[in-house]
Length: 288
Image 1 (cartoon, rainbow, N blue to C red):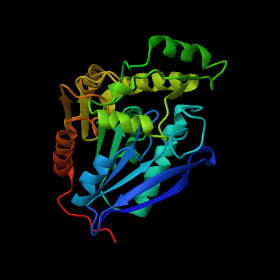
Image 2 (image 1 turned 90 degrees about the vertical axis):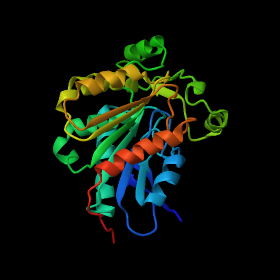
Image 3 (image 1 turned 135 degrees about the horizontal axis):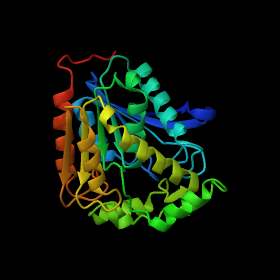
Image 4 (image 1 turned 60 degrees about the vertical axis):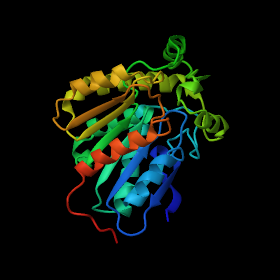
């Protein structure tokens, strides 16, 4: 049995952001807090939910502003601070609901940049985390046509809400046709990006890469070697810049961008589980 609940919390500007949680029966061993990617939402990680709930993990996700069930112009932010502070507030909510439980922070694609930026900006707060996992992190070149990024940079100052289709190839998501068909029919998914988001994203990626040497938490990076959306070379460069000893990077040679749904998702989830088990405290936390 999986106990699912949903609700809202107030993000920056008192925006009511949508979130979900899935709880196992009995004691919770650890919590996975997940941050989705551009155009995504918190409901698209069913394989992770189905794999980890029976192993006594709780999972929390929220729809970032401008995504999923949350309000806001699709793919728009005023500044990256909004993403960062929304995550900060959400982590506070999780810790209030389930205090003293080990928390792992998981970011996918754009969500990885949100996660990495938060941890590097707030190292003292992030010290409560048990570890950080990034799936296909967007840390360098991305599969958005260069001309669209250039237009975004030009428009950001004069028309920050200017919106374009990102031009990302749906077929680059996964090698499973059934998965691609489900993505195409997903009404919560969108393919929009705004001028301001483009410039904020590029600035934040540059900042994160420039501060990689300051990283101080156990880190797992999982990336598809055939990922055309977020190129794997970028996460390799970041990984090599991290000087913290407890770091692991696994590249799956044939895998695409949506690692949690691709043909080898069971291998990915098995590797993730192995790493999580290695980083869990020996004492099982009992949540009342």
